[in-house]
Amino acid sequence: MQYGICNLSIIPLRLEPSDKSELVSQVLYGEFFKVLEQRKFWSRIRLAHDKYEGWIDNKQYVEIDNESYSTLESQTPILSSDLVEFVEDDAKNLFTIPIGSCLNGLSILNHSHDGNVIDKVIPKENLISTAFTYLNSPYLWGGKTPFGIDCSGFTQMVYKLNGYKLLRDASQQATQGQALSFIEESEPGDLAFFDNDEGNIVHVGIIMENNYIIHAHGKVRIDRLDHSGIYNTDRRIHTHKLRVIKKII
Image (cartoon, rainbow, N blue to C red; front, side, top):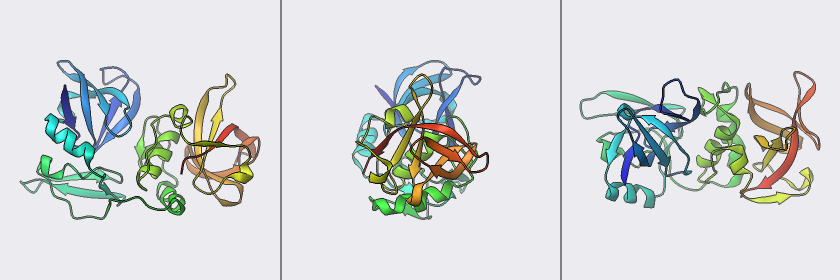
């Protein structure tokens, strides 16, 4: 088995081994993974954090050994908490990194960092203030940063920055936690999931106080939440049909 770590700010994780293939997620600086298959130009990987799989360009990561991977996997994540920061290599070259980048591998990459970090579990009450960090971020299918993010990438990153693990896709996240019977039983930080006409879960957002929800739809925005679903306050229509509410924490 081979292993790797992302040494660049943000790299695309694709469905197929091609630059033209669909973006299914992103690998942020310092995230590490198993290499499941390696070809001349592409590698299929499985991320350690959420076990998500996809293809990345061989030029966009650094190989590490089994011992380094095991060490990283055993450690409490240390994450950058500034919207944008820098790491520096031995030659004083700067690399930008986005919020939520993993800093446990700094010594492996021979990089240094002196910005703010998060290295512990934070009370659930902090989830909403973290979510506001991404407010008005543009929607991007497969995105995980304030410069482009999708609905489940948004919820995953907000939870991750507070020390909690969520899976990557909305349908996967819906398998986690405890289902609630009514909106009234929820509290800020719980997740609401929404389905399509076929009954497939296709959207997720974070519940706020007073029947509001923050979610990524066009951009990270705040809308009303009722028993039918999400009511878009700009368009004055329901845009998403409520399926289930989950208490993850």
